[in-house]
Image (cartoon, rainbow, N blue to C red):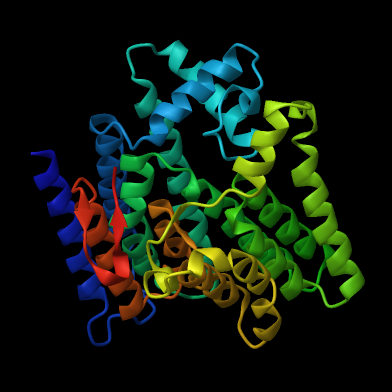
Amino acid sequence: ALQATVACITFSSLWLMLYRLGPGKLAVVSQDISWLLVLIFLNGLLIRLALSYYTYGNIDMDFWKKTWEFVSHGQNIYASYNRYNYSPVWSWLIKFIGDIQKLAPTLPFHFVLKAFLTLSDTCLFFVLACLAKRKKLSLIDVGLFFYLNPVSIFISSCHGQIDGAVMLLLIIGIYLYEIVGSRSFLGKFLLWLFSTLAMILKHHVVYQVFICVNYAFRKWTHKILLLAASAIGFFALFIPYWDNGKASFNIIHYVWFYTASPGGYGLACFIKDWYHMSPLFAVSLFVFPLFLRKLDLIGQCLLGVLFFLVFATGYGHQYLVLPIALAALRPSKGSLLFTMMGMFLFLGWDHQYIDIPAFRFAHP
């Protein structure tokens, strides 16, 4: 029954997107559409909360529980086990979420955590709507292509991943940069600050900091100083957890140099030894933004995510949510195709093996 419900949600959402992409459907909506936005919001919220409660999550949910237990007992999370691959900030949020769950013990931990992620996605929806209104884009498209997007729903409400919260911080930075003023130092500073916070929460978007700083600042002295400040802020968080034994080893190998499972998507599907080319991939992430000066900030950030997905040397299904928020401001048939392929992948996730050349992966 749950799989049937999920399938209905998926295909109904895709049909709505397809309708919006029909001839002439991407025009700016100027009439009163508040009732339709409310309908999209309530529909998306109910779907997300229902899936948050009735689905447990993927294997990471067990790791989140262990993280809560370790942090609650004052243990060094990095010395306790090597499956925590994030900065300390996410462990602090998990402890906060766990403490809230203690106040309502009848609610399962997985629901409280995913309700927090749903709140994060809801805030992201409103920020995207404000940004779209400022740029005179369709608010309906933002609702359909983000808040009702099945990829976004599955990652936050089924799998329980924090990538949506990471994108929230980045989009807030872009929005503040737009409203404060692209020429003001405050606007540039806020863009750098929130892109750095996004990177600190989950450092697989480190290239976004470089894109934002490179876009907002012209002088290389400013760029280098701000990028150095971002790096120092990130690494300084690990100082209280550093030791001469297991913790430092795990931080280096399972956080700073963490890579997902080999293979998956992008060039890794077609080039056998692509996984061994990760140093070239890491360097290229910071080189290609230098050639994107003609694109606006949202276009550069979106292209950065797509570059990451194509050239990534390892697979993490949660990575597929990264372009969704940015693509909601650039709705196209390409974003619809991306969503369809992503959901085709997720709906078959319980199978032992999916043999699709562009989306090949093994599930233990």
